[in-house]
Image (cartoon, rainbow, N blue to C red; front, side, top):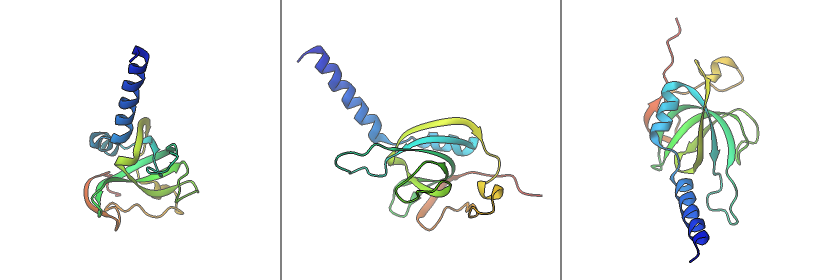
Length: 145
């Protein structure tokens, strides 16, 4: 085997490993505790043939939980980015961690739920929703006085 072919094989295996791992729990917990926005690459079609590239999303993470089906997931407000279920901008979404192919924290922080800023957005539900099982971490906001 030529050296170039060996390099290509190693790079291909490493890329596949990284793309199949999803995002680490600690990254999610850091985003929740730090209340910062994140750019993600999300795979809506993990089993598509031919493969479909992941889509870009800009989100605020509010909950980290396990779904009723046993998958680790986040409840987030998607500020920008299209999806197969929500073509419009701005919606509450659930993202499975194993389908997140890229996690890019930003320096943009939030101090209150997005639903407090816009009355047309459904109210933030700090217990996630009916599809979530055990909530492992959630964003905490200061009490209104």
